[in-house]
Image (cartoon, rainbow, N blue to C red):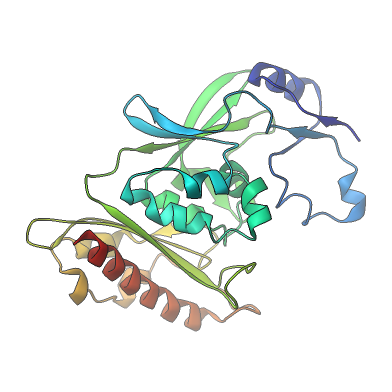
Length: 277
């Protein structure tokens, strides 16, 4: 087993072209999911690569470095539209996991219950991938293609998450349902970003749901129907939840998940609307 820790992206790209390596950042998903014999693999740790962590604005949009920890995201001074993402950051495992776990690791793990995905979908995030062949950018909505599946190829590293500047005064919110308060896999989770006009009606809406389909989904029909409504009078209809395909498992059955999502959507929209005032 080789454990490689390059300090530059170029070194990392070269290693990926010449070695069969598994990329690890915080390792909080990687190590618990492996059996003992599966740990004997060559690892490329990206957390020491210069410039791969941090949050800032570049070219009029927000950039979150791939190796940025959930603790750093939760503590950052960000616009109110990022509040849902910061709330989700505080729900990722324990404090120790939040300190080690990274935003890109959460995306590349591609769990249907990944806490970071719904709020990033509401922020219309895109994923930057780099390799010795160059860089490319993929919308997050296309990056995760299935359970534990992404568009990342074996020679690529996620280098950053990009987020367009959200509307002024937009406010985010995040709702998570689990069997207990901490250290729990989501039964369902819902993220929302809401903006209100001068009359107190919704002028901008983004709603995304996780743990209720193989890949977290934006509820675009609901987003459209929310425009012009008062947050306190919103209703969730069955057709709004049509993109979802929840399963029955030990944490809850499909019908329960749909009921929970409908309630979470109502709560997220109302909470964001109330904070807007």
